[in-house]
Amino acid sequence: MPVPKRKKSKSKSRMRRAHEAIGAPNLRPCPKCGVYTMPHRVCPECGYYKNELVVEKKVKISD
Ligand SMILES: [Zn+2]
Image 1 (spheres, helix red, strand yellow):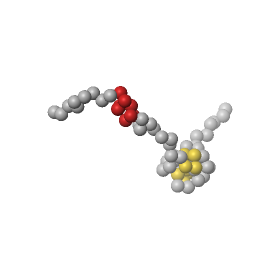
Image 2 (cartoon, rainbow, N blue to C red):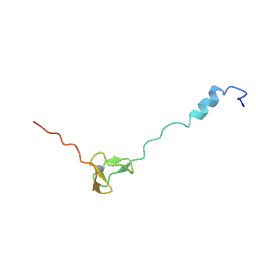
Image 3 (cartoon, helix red, strand yellow):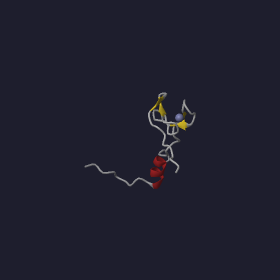
Image 4 (cartoon, rainbow, N blue to C red):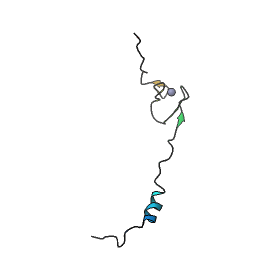
């Protein structure tokens, strides 16, 4: 089985990891309420997806 001849230097590992950062999420404003949300997902604010109510928002029952 082939084995690497030399250990990768700290510099080489760090050079590779310099490109592994997670970027900012791709957000789009909701057409219903305007809140920035992830595309292709139900809006967490109003519960709409493709101009259709899919998830009813929880209503707090006061006593
Ligand atoms: Zn919305």
